[in-house]
Image (cartoon, rainbow, N blue to C red; front, side):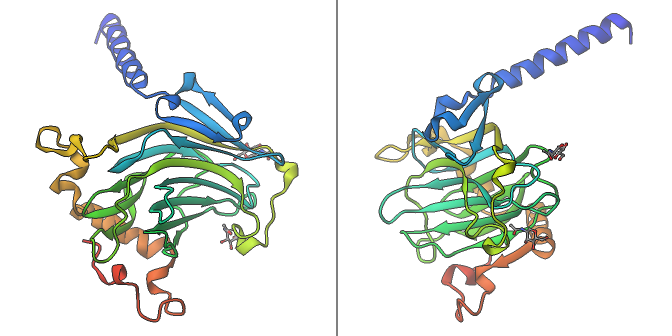
Length: 285
Ligand SMILES: *[C@@H]1O[C@H](CO)[C@@H](O)[C@H](O)[C@H]1NC(C)=O
Ligand SMILES: CC(=O)N[C@H]1CO[C@H](CO)[C@@H](O)[C@@H]1O
């Protein structure tokens, strides 16, 4: 390859990278800050942001619209070093009195000690469907992708495209089907988060800073009747048969997570549930 063709190849690649970057939506296109306005900073030309927690306040954002089904992924880099007691979340919630909710909660830890990923699902106002995982990487070191896929067949929580939690979504077992807003937040959870509340926040380490990178909100805003975007003319991949169950390779990575990283699963907590809840009795596929 000549120098000139190498240079034009590099230029072309840079163009493509710019196009891809430019395609990232700005945060304020879909989200607004709802708590701690001066504790949120836009970065990267508004395509990413930082959520800050200090002694005076934490912060949170919320989407303008609600989404009934769809796919949401968000790149996140969690609070590094001593993050004991700090909880960072990404969740979907309908906020109604009998609300539906899907939660990722990242529980910080002392420097060098591992984060825990805590998840929960609320249906009709009832939660208590927790699972907990350790992670196969340090989530404070780099950005990783956390995602929800939810449709009329399944609910999947992904970490870097690996399904860590899967539930069949059926009207007779569990059915979070209310349109939900997207939320993210950072707050003081030191009464419970780290070693059950033993490790408190060290305010000398503040401010605590979680970084929210690019996101992909592939859904359609709620409207009644619902929804134009999943009629036959506007088929969405997340509502198509290919997204109704896990693929064989997703199943094996899901099993790999259950075997190596699952710390707690309410479905197998016989003390709390002598009879496993109905949704736990279904195969995830
Ligand atoms: C924090 O580290 C301790 C000690 O390694 C561990 O027991 C705990 O599960 C870790 N995570 C949280 C959130 O408490
Ligand atoms: C203040 C402090 O201790 N900062 C450290 C946090 O951890 C990174 C590595 O993960 C160090 O480079 C910083 O010095």
